[in-house]
Image (cartoon, rainbow, N blue to C red; front, side):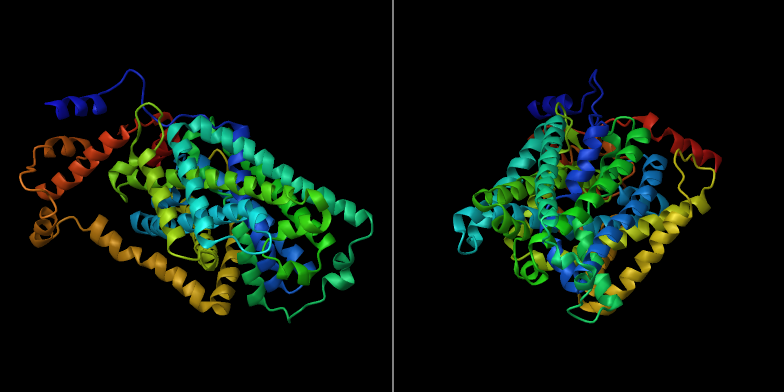
Length: 530
């Protein structure tokens, strides 16, 4: 009787519509893009870009061109974001355009490795820079870095579970902080240049190659830079929480991407104003080395600045990647519990907890820096598939309402670059890229068994039934079928799924959000006329 009363309380309709709150204005939207892009990448990737580019001049060209490619991609995503106004980014667009399997493969690789690994790398960078002043003559202990990174992940998960407003305010503040940190590097670097310390930047020296340049190595340099630029599409993951998304989504993209490109290019120029290429390649913490050489007794400012930058990056990745899990669950590709939000706070607590647990697991299994190339490859693969979907959608549904329509040359140019980059990356690093493909393709059997295969043999149901405690019965099936009328499954499976979902609702105090039809009206209206 008590359970029934609690269930009624959780699932009963309220006078206030329970839905994701629209609390992301233009400033916060810019902060999400800038805050997600500028994380640990600008402090990690310069070494990898220079190593593969082979010269200072070519590495700077890679940084600028990388920003230009992101600008082309972001314009395509602006069109997709206002045409298909759903949270979930690449996953939602690809699922809408190509169907469930392709969307699930992107979701699978993102949830399994891409975002947990990126979060783990940023969290480890945070803990390394925080602990660096205490261990000046040696590397911080392995356990200490993992423990601090885990505490940081847990704290920011709690913040994101508690309030969307708190999470966006943290993002705003730390985005300003990281821009100020990079501004300090740029200003000090410009002062050095004005004093005549720019030998490494002279054209005659900048294009002295330490190795013969090859297209394959340049492609790998772009992959390293892409890790620093990753996150440019993350505002599309929270479209349903943006105030007036059809206006603010493209505006935020057009403001943020050029700003980040300028900041990255100037930061790398500042690095080379005080460090030789050999010193940069030998450094494990570029910003710290820069500070030690130029800031003297104030060199402690740099590790703190980097720590603040990465802290904001962790918050941004948690905020957006949890919305990807939320969108996947809403489409039926992940457990339905992940599509629920807190009754009062309107935050996707189950999805946030899954992202938190997956990241901590990656932290515990060992070194994550070796996975950066896998992440970059899968990232670029998903970008290309999504932008190809833009062209396909134009052909498939030409009458669809498009508040923004970019010139066809923009997605075509991006796809040409994308194909060349991935082709030469496969040629230069077949094992790394091949493993990235394998990780993604492992989702194929999972999709067909877990999502597509509805009428499974009875022995599978009996096996699942053994997981149900004796006497649990199937008394909650009718309620579950009302919640999910599209599911046609064996009663025992319904019982297990319903009980897990119900327990999750009680623990997290979550319910299904009520959609806002006005957000998808142009899309659904066009379906009828196409």
